[in-house]
Amino acid sequence: MNAEPEITAFVKAMSSVERLRVIGALVRGRATQAEIADQLHLPAREAFQHLSFLLQAGIVREEQGFYALNEKTVETLARRQFEGTRSAYETGDEKPEDVRKVLKTYLNADGTLKQLPQEGRKMGIVLHYILEAFPPGATFTEKEVNAILRRFHVDTATLRRNLIDYGLMARAGNGSKYWRLSEPLPPLERGAR
Image 1 (spheres, rainbow, N blue to C red):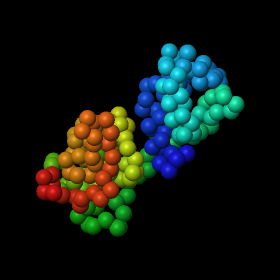
Image 2: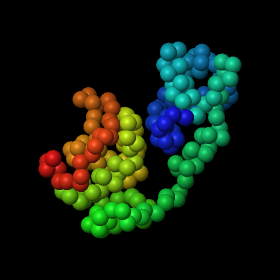
Image 3: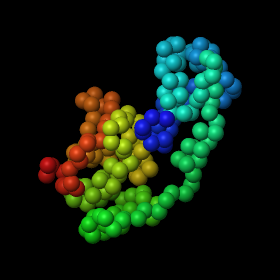
Image 4: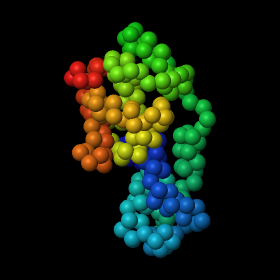
């Protein structure tokens, strides 16, 4: 597994329809890269790229040219990601009192958002809280960003747009990748940067 947290790699792996198809093929049994490409009608290079990603994430293993699903890893990661319980949110004493009050107002006990605050300082505080779910140095597709944001609230488009507008995340001009800025600004109102 690389330096990214396991669960982030797992979410990235599961966010691709083609990688899910590769996993589905491996559920039937071990196979070579060529067999997987043939079964899924994929170019060999594309099959190799998906298998390499899944290998790196620890979801599949390779032995003597045959790929197999690493069922124990998948089960463990899936259970952690999708189990019905979420840890309770605690504001932590290290945060200033005004930040703790805003978070208590807008967050449920499990850390999800009750509602989105209006633009302004309260939104900035909530966005800083959400930003902690994005590891520094990692890049994400829009689908991956949405998958992470959905953990907090269903309105992923508003959250994604505000993370950019508030200067907490950046994206490529064509929207193909997103990343957390290394030095996010303090919780300010939009446009106050």
